[in-house]
Image 1 (cartoon, rainbow, N blue to C red):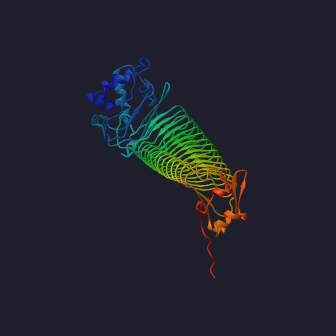
Image 2: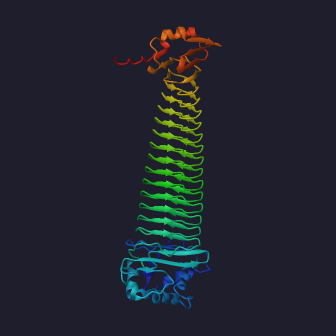
Image 3: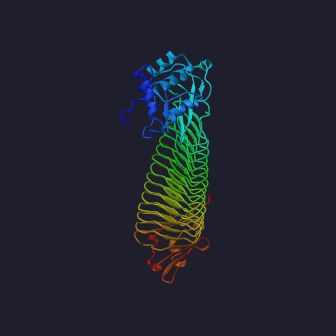
Length: 492
């Protein structure tokens, strides 16, 4: 037929006896596999679609109607169209409807193969589902078969089969249960609800605020435009939000989830997932499993959940929480806040003025290229400031701290155990002693509580802990190397 194949409505309009349309139908038989019938009724007021996955599917339409007769010539098929389809109403009205592209009255529900009587003509608000088996699939016509109209699909149709189905929705709120098989559904306008069930399904919600359940199998789901909810199910699913503020859940299985545009909420699920936040500010929770998480653009909140996760913040100011497991997190651009959580974590601030907190566990923190703040946490941590003027606090535990370049401040407050500073003096570094340590006179500390051990300086702050400065002799230290917060005197 070439690229200029006319629509069914064009063919029906060409003459009154349907011979051109009948001729087109005859081209789509088992003896001519090169032709297909995949055209759409062209009524601008209707939401209709004809999808035939096999060449002879349209001929099978007659058999599904229960038609008994010879369909080997144009006249016979024209008779079928008139005599069988016209039983749903006056033949002249049917012809006029096809010629004008709009039918004002249709059956409330029509499944091909069911008897059709005049009593089916009670309401113009209809759900029309046409289904017929074909050689290697199933033909589905949602809304109409040569009967364009304004219709709605308000109930789960009996249409989908246990085979591999192809369905297209309407502009209304569709409720679709795809059953078994490798099914494909393309939604349109309207707030749709689609369930994939068994098989490896492909579901696109289209426009509207849709809810998609992918079911079992390795499925692909797209929310489309609108604020959608897409739930992965039990297989290794591809879950996509597209545009809008979406809610995505991987469920069971190793899933890939992509938020797309909009401010999305993404839940990874029970196994190792790959998650991409998308273009705006997203909330991501990896769930259980060893997850790979990319915040991408926007001010994202990223939580690895349990498992050993790898997290990249991306662009802008992100909050990253490793949570349980031995996590690795990179802040990326922007002023990020990284918190390791409960195990042995590795945190990298990258660009921007970042805040890194190790939490519990033996953590590794590296600030990056700007002025960062690093807080080690409860165990023995390794902290590196990187470029810039950094604030470094080891917290509890025996920590090893390196300022790298810049004028860094090494902060000690409360009980801090036995800490080591590996490069004190590279730049204008300072040691900050908090008010809770109760130090009034730093000169006394330098005179009586500072000793040399193996070429290093050890500052003993008695019950609070000790500070070792590698490669620095006590004689090289002065009061100018310290910032001392004076204790707060109690009120009389």
